[in-house]
Image 1 (cartoon, helix red, strand yellow):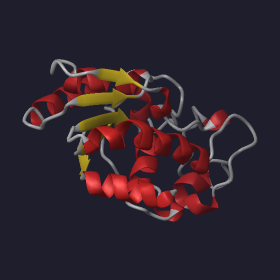
Image 2 (cartoon, one colour):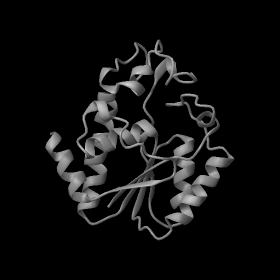
Image 3 (cartoon, one colour):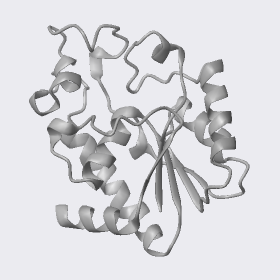
Length: 195
């Protein structure tokens, strides 16, 4: 089984400031959310945990699964999507003149700003490669895999697993510190069909 979780609350989440690659740690509420998830999912079996190197996801992973005695592996491909110069903005979901607004309102019309921002296609390429190279082989061995990541990064994996069109990029609506699960057939078969 594959389990995907989004990190807990940060100060920037609380004030709706766009984080992306900006490395913001969990706040007290986020730590509490992760501790509640630890308790809530104590009966869910994980053989291995992969997590993003950004503090908020790494902290969440350590709190949720770090005491299980399983391999805890940081992977660069699980970083959040880069939003370039738009990181740190607060009106990204309401300001229609913002370069990043289409990503949240109409993802299939999103054009990457001309800076260090990442396109949906680039994001899906790196997360899809991660799933194919790391996750699918483990699942085929019968392993239960936990991935702790971010809103857009997780959405890119879910979009590929569920074979959703780009316009439904945000359809999963993965809440903070809640698990979403997928069977091996769904993950392996749908990713293989993409090739």
